[in-house]
Image 1: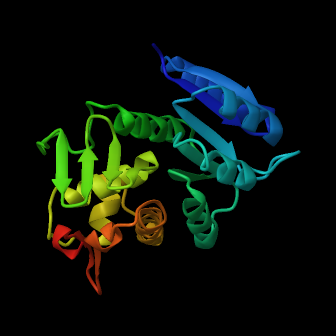
Image 2: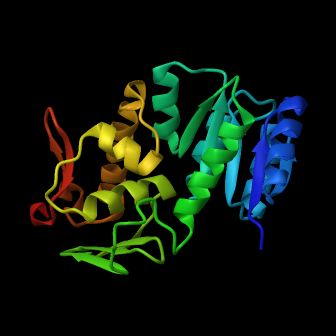
Length: 237
């Protein structure tokens, strides 16, 4: 079955352009020209990925993103004309999996979509040469690789695909310190100095979810190594 993509953008030219490129790759594409229509479609259809503009009529993309993240972990790529660092950081803070700045190359958008869909497939990982077990167990934390689930003593922790990828990458190499640039390259498959805060915002979100959704101290397993980066240390629990 082909993956289904939703494009939420009030500019018909952009929707048609992206639809043409995505359909060439075999995707099924739906469109929404305003925020309310887009949110309704996301709530009622399980999309493989959503391309979401921020400035939309009837309901802006920020509110859509916040609402979706209360009920689904659907991969969401923001497409926005606001390209400053703070806007990108805000997007990641709200739960976006990627951020593309207008004007953009439609080929780049397709590649970003492919990269996200590849990571969310159960049997495909972003580091093919790295062999992982099906289940990683660390004291109070269980990472089920194939099922894409993170389980704590109180139940499953609801992570977005990118949050899961980042946690899994760190957990596969316990007590090894990774620079932010290394994490960007491994998890996002691109390296830009201006985007290094992307890692910080995702780490912050993972820790916050651990604290909110579990009574255990699992958030302490993700350790900040000042001046260097981050590492995973199960003994900190």
